[in-house]
Length: 257
Image (cartoon, rainbow, N blue to C red):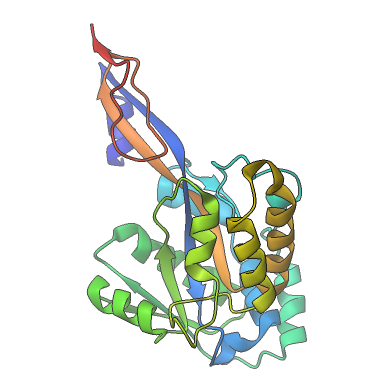
């Protein structure tokens, strides 16, 4: 039994969760190696069962998602909610389109953060089941962090920290590798849309998010498998408390009874 499940069954303890403005991902190296092939990247995205990953890795508390827009955002609606589903047949079709011949796909992860390691294990299993020759390489996190920033990987488990504005999450991974090796999504149109998003009033941003999402599904520069979440456990005599998307405890209006 997990710690969260155990706590939720403990008398006098309450457990609740909140979606955070962050995304759980696997980064792709799109400048070199087998993942320069967009059809192969799309095949990988269709080979992943995101809901099963959420159930196994977060006890069902995260939101399964395949978009760069966190599910906690007001912009997570309409076409943005539609994306890569779990579709092994579609994955097989795209592997043929990609001309995939069994080339190895290397997944980098670490054991310092257990969920990142478990994400790598699950994704490796899904890819092998889809006929993709995936292996898992485990580094310490310091080494993985350096490799992420220098682009020295093929595929990597990577989770983005929350940002109150989802456009700032997108900004982190969109741009030219020549100026910043950690960038994932190098399509100039994606960067132009992101720049436009950063300069547009909130009330007018939805069409830009929709356009970015449509382009993301075409380019597939990474896997997004869920929106991040935060879970809190506290004694039931604490009134008015709830998990907060900012992840830190927020005690405004909270009292003890």
